[in-house]
Image: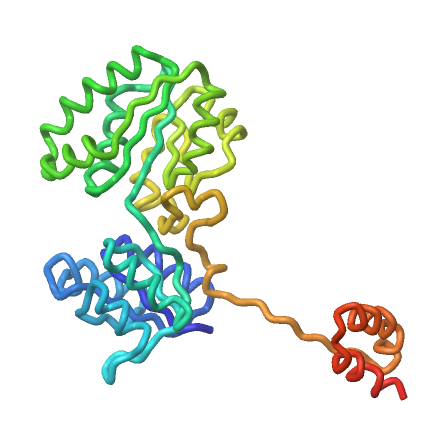
Length: 300
């Protein structure tokens, strides 16, 4: 099994360390900045204690990625680095990939909310703000109900005034938010599929039916009472998810990411003799005479 490393908030520790433990990884190192929001946070340390993670290092940012990849006298190198981070962390992970494995090169957080006339505008606005407060975070509403769009816009203005991170949330909304009015549900699904969002919240009365029309999303949340925050903190699947449209071909972090497969092949003399003509023909086609000879010499 590999030795894994991850960056930390309490929720991040859970969404990275738990899949590793489920896969049987015995050595897990957690890194976080030496601040009240990082490795000096008692909640982070308590989470690690409850999980049985015994290595917590007070180092963060790109330098933590380098330490995990190349090792220090006090911090042995790892085989795989997982977990979200800022732009510098993402670029550092990209740089060390190949020296170690990584989960992904994650970009800013993002959500697409699909709404209809039954969607509560105060719910939809709260979901959009929850992503925007990541700052940066892309928040997109797609609806074919003009009334829902206008009411959600009004709710955004009302609710953002109450947020502790109001200033950066407003900046994120101005830079990355969109309220999109479409013709119908089919167009909403087509646009969503082309975006391939990290988070998809289908807040309509026929959410399951719309889900069947959408193939690309990191994690999907169905119905008015399934906000994305349940995936952040409680629902179960890891919330390390593909961003920037990579959900077209990538999946969220899981125990499978900490496992690897390898082949074990064993032939008898009779078995080799039966399959030899196929091997010989392919070797001849490719002009690899030594490949063919390695089979011929065994046939006598």
